[in-house]
Image (cartoon, rainbow, N blue to C red; front, side, top):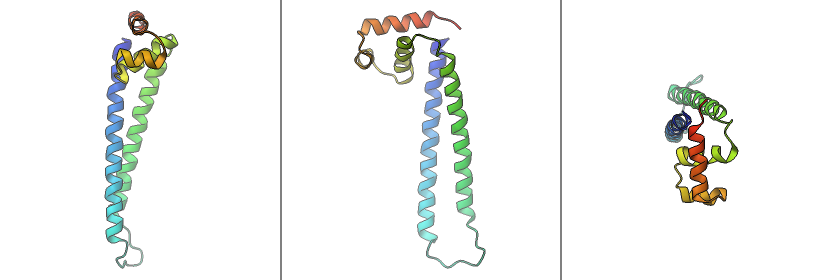
Length: 126
């Protein structure tokens, strides 16, 4: 159960990364649009509909990103009952996809200890 939750976090983080890329792409388009049209004469009361569309899309993406982040936070809160070492090992292994060697170096435990923390946490159900 814990491992499935961690894999879900990994998927959700990927979604956030994609959203961030989309936001950056839109911002690039906005900048390009602003440069092209900034020096052109405009009628009084001119409203740039394209920029409004861009801003609206960014707001939608940011809202979606916030919802996904909230879901990640809820999942992390659900598994926060785990012992600290087990919790960190699981996050590094299943979310950050670190190797056992990297995890052991980061936490200062042996690889076998890290694997034991992981195996013990997998046995816990909630």
